Image 1 (cartoon, rainbow, N blue to C red):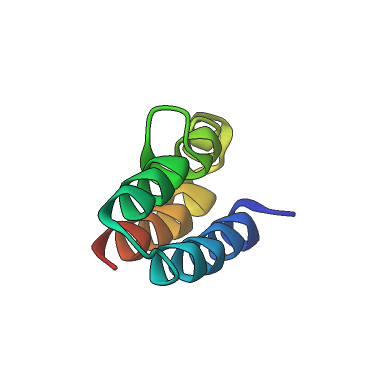
Image 2 (cartoon, helix red, strand yellow):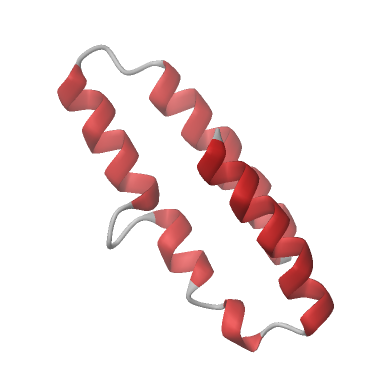
Amino acid sequence: MNLSEELDSIYKEAIQKIGSSISEEDLDKNKNDFIGKKGKLTAVLKNVASLSIEEKKQSDKKQTNFLKN
């Protein structure tokens, strides 16, 4: 799975879990599972340094969309 596909997968999972959060505690936990210090998105983004310039440009767009939504 390439970075773009991985970001798409994480985004879809995040939308589903955050959307199904019942309480503020659930929402915070789900948010941290994705963008926290040990979150899924954080783990994937640690690999960005090893990408080509073109792949970095594509991942930047996806990262921005992920974090804005």
